[in-house]
Image 1: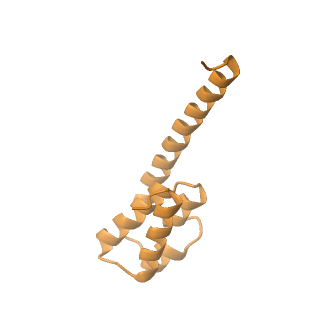
Image 2: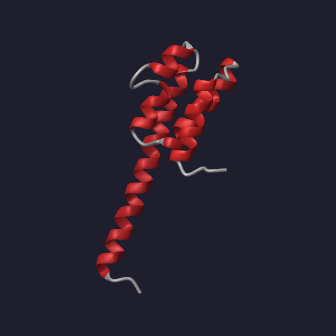
Length: 95
């Protein structure tokens, strides 16, 4: 049985996790508007594209954005693939 303190900590962690997920989803929606940008702009510009999500530790969303960019622009460069696998690994998606 959880102590009162442990219950409070658990509730706080659940709330924080929900907030972070919502924040990451909002960032993903903002960055999806960049699918028509150049590869260089999407891939190399600080605080834009997948990097904006990665900097906020939104690794799953960052990987999803990279996938969407590659599909939308028919771009499968080694650099994008590297970053995609990097973000999946950071998100714990090892398969």
